[in-house]
Amino acid sequence: MQERKLKHPALAASYERIAKLSALPLWEIMGDVVGDAPSPMGVPHLWPYAEMRALLMEAGRQISAAEAERRVLALKNPALDRPGISQTLFAGLQLVMPGEIAPAHRHAAGALRFVLESDGGYSAVEGERCIMRRGDLITTPSWTWHDHENTGSGPLIWLDGLDVPIVNFFGARFGEDHPGDQQPILRPDDASVARWGSGLRPDGQRHDHPWSPLLSYPYERSRAALMACATGTPDPRHGFRMVYANPLDGGHILPTIAAFLQFLPAGFETAPGRSTESIVFVAVEGEGVARIGDVELAFAENDVFVAPNWSPIRLQARRDVVLFSFSDRAAQQRLGIWREEETAH
Ligand code: 1HN
Image 1: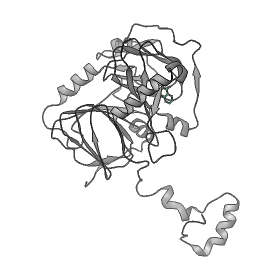
Image 2: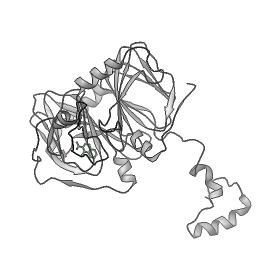
Image 3: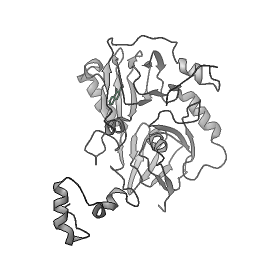
Image 4: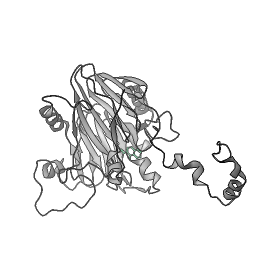
């Protein structure tokens, strides 16, 4: 209170007495509490895959997956003082080496995995193995048991996305280890794809959870759907973009996190725009340039980059580009606060 320039300096003596009771005169700070428009939190940033992978492989020689519990390089926004990629989202790159297991646990935070390199492996979620192939999206909803295993002969690497900062903001952090390294398997591999992934739903079977019953969105299907929709004129803001949907209600995959797959044909550049969500992108195919706020980020395959909330975004494809992205839009829409707008640049 004392450091800022007061709007009503004549009232300073009262303010000191108000402060002693741990209260604040709202009329002095109204703009900070319910201002006209948000400021971006954190900065745009890119993590080049080649360098991140080299450090991940070095960690693979230094510490086992079992010892680390999770061998993850957390992507920290350079302008934030917590281990989040944005003020609402956690992102990291995880490595499991051949024959290794990341032991079973569960936590209040919800997660997704987007697979970058795989020669065979799975993430087991709540009694079911979700097979991991490059480009597959796998979800781990809140409080579901999960463990990972590399059954191939090359490294298994994926991008983790979690709502950790949101859960911790609410003070709702819980977690526990499973008594065994691996949870018991109760259903066939990719059972959720067979049950919920074909435009049919099991008659009479209820799914009373605020997340999608589909735990896996295999890239082969997602890419085919994206390319089937990529005809005619691309949307000026987003190119050709699909939302990973809950097949029961068309909603987002998780109550907090939305995910997208986007195709930008070579040479295409999106019109600038911004939204209140923070967005994490990974280049699945191709290369291009992202202009976020006043930062220019050249991206190539497997690079991860972040666009903070309310930062104008322009995406340019140098070659045919497929981008996966996830954001906190699902949480914001549930709270009724999500907004977007076009911008001049
Ligand atoms: C976690 O449990 C995983 O299960 C990955 O693979 C990343 C980051 C923060 C907190 C928990 C996993 C995580 C995490």
